[in-house]
Amino acid sequence: MGLKAIGRDAIFIVPPSCLTVVQGLYPIASSQMPVLNVTFASTAAAATGVLAAMRRLKKPTQVVAWAGDGGTADIGLQALSAAIERVEDFIYICYDNEAYMNTGVQRSSTTPKGVLTNNTVQGKVEQKKDLPAIVAAHNPAYVATCSASFPLDFHDKLLKAKQIKGFKYIHIHTPVLRLGVEDRMAIAVGRQSVESGLVRSL
Ligand SMILES: Cc1ncc(C[n+]2csc(CCOP(=O)(O)OP(=O)(O)O)c2C)c(N)n1
Ligand SMILES: [Mg+2]
Image (cartoon, rainbow, N blue to C red; front, top):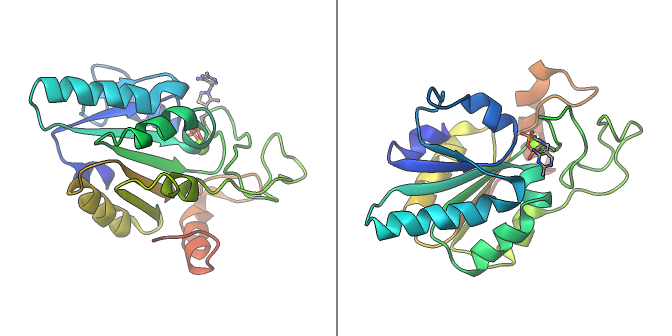
């Protein structure tokens, strides 16, 4: 849905995550789009560099950083904060599956309180970091929260972000397997998270 909204003239910046696995290996990336794989800490800085190169080449190519919750809320937060403060003109998407999934379900700072992961076996003690609020405190051009359980809403928010100049941030709640929750329940859990008010979709 994201690729459909973004269109063909785009470059993606992706740190280590499940998304790296989905996209596959060069030159046969499943996204069929240019993707730059970067280190965790450098996602927003790398996007800034690609954006500067595109500006220099006078190309309107859309630069999109797309990272997980660990890559955004934890390891990539400094570079993200700096890019927003510099008013870089790219879209940053964080898909929040609420854990370090690619390495086998370990807690991140966006894992909600009480959730079971492989290193919070009695349930996480600390509360979920409110990343969209942290980003909003930087006062960027656009901040949106949405859920993978409402894909058309995500699509429309991306279309809107594309029209806006400046820094755009979209946070997608993407609940998948947790210990104790079956895969087939993921979409229902996502829907109920929004409808109960546990997760914002604004
Ligand atoms: C500096 C560094 N530390 C640790 C890793 C190992 N690693 C690869 S993917 C990953 C989890 C990423 O979690 P998240 O950003 O939430 O994405 P998800 O896997 O959930 O899609 C980790 C810890 C790494 N690649 N680089
Ligand atoms: Mg994750």
